[in-house]
Image (cartoon, rainbow, N blue to C red; front, side, top):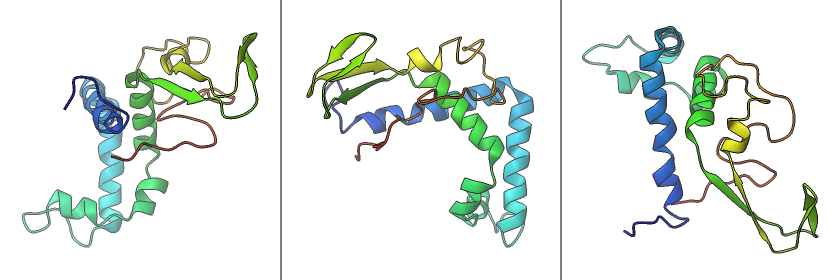
Amino acid sequence: MSETPDATQLPEEADHLPASWLVTYLGCHPNWRNEARAEVKKLIASYSPETVSERNTSSTALSSIPLSAWENETPVLDMLIREAIRLSQAYVAFRRNVGPAMYIDGKVIPTGALVAHPAANVHLDPALYPDPWKFDPARPQPKGNLTYLGWGGGAFLRCVPY
């Protein structure tokens, strides 16, 4: 493997960062750790056929929870993951202008040109996120287009398969 990852390696190289930071943040914020734990325990109680025991391990109980429940019944986890991604994803997005020439801040972006945009310009902007380095999952989300990039943004958001 080369020292510099190519485009097919980026998700593998990047997806562990928010998870690692989330564990760190939860270690530093017991109130959020307790809320996350309570939310997961509630899911297990609702969807697992039996309580966690030697026979029914945590992984068995967690795997019995349907995807729809993880997606629709975990507002605390959603806030925690979103905030960890906001703080930990210091990537630069590259987009090719496939449409007609356009202007950004008075500069022309011709058809076919690549534009680089650091996500930190959005995620750490104090105008959008007051006290931007503070871990605050409950902070109000800024209004507007592309005020949170997460894994990217725009009409054609896709992760590169690996």
